[in-house]
Length: 373
Image 1: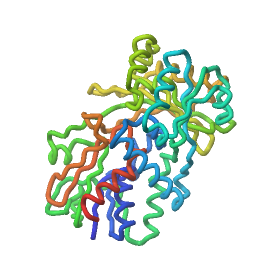
Image 2: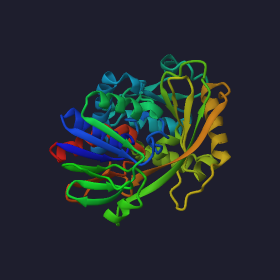
Image 3: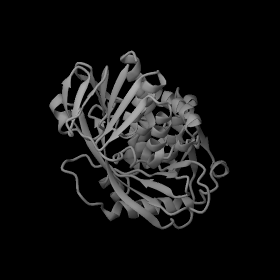
């Protein structure tokens, strides 16, 4: 079988991985010289802790298992099972963390509620003041800026994979066949369009009523911290964002403890991951209304800096980079992904939202199973 994958981001590359692993030939087409979208502009988190129960959690846990297996084959991914800590302050935040540990699926997520001393034993870099911390052992991380490069190198080594950069697919010209902007036709048994947040052009022509929206966020990366940050770190604003924490305790938090004005205005949470070079990736904001701003705003960065410094108990290293990114999210946010046959032999796979890095291996596995690869 020959599979054409359109899109060089993590969702597309994981579809290529699944096809090659199952013995098929793959041609992967990317409109840029290298992928430049949300697959690189993210935390690199394999984030199990905040996922909704049911299908979403099952997908995240399966993806976590697949990431670990792929990481063993591709050391360049930088896979590490680092877990996460969410420090909490005050009775309302503590109650949400405590309720999380009482969930039926708490053991599957690896939830534990730790005292400050126990949390610092897990992550000594957290020298700030807090009352407790929610630990999720199943969270993990990879290196987002290099993951696709490492995966492609491993795919090329098998001899059944071709990467075609700098080509934008413009037209479906038959069953399992597409034409790029150089006029070349690429034919296969199946075409998978994994175009991420690129929802215009061909995607709009094929699926004009696509139930997917675009979301913009701001992030930053620092110089090396100078010490290990042993886990990923979130703050209690993440409770307000992730569906795993919904319930009476979260309702009480929302009613009794307002977010900081900047955090509320920009729909913020703190997520922080240390890169292999020692720097910290920190974010993020959420912007849903189009048209998106073309510039980045400083207030969210100042807010994040204050939160991080209060948890680390030390000044933040110098910021090396700031950026904005855009990802695609199903308008029904309970759906993990939108998968749709748009022409004979052609499938569109998009809309995982902020779950793309986490769930992409399992999303691709499901596509492969459904198409009988």
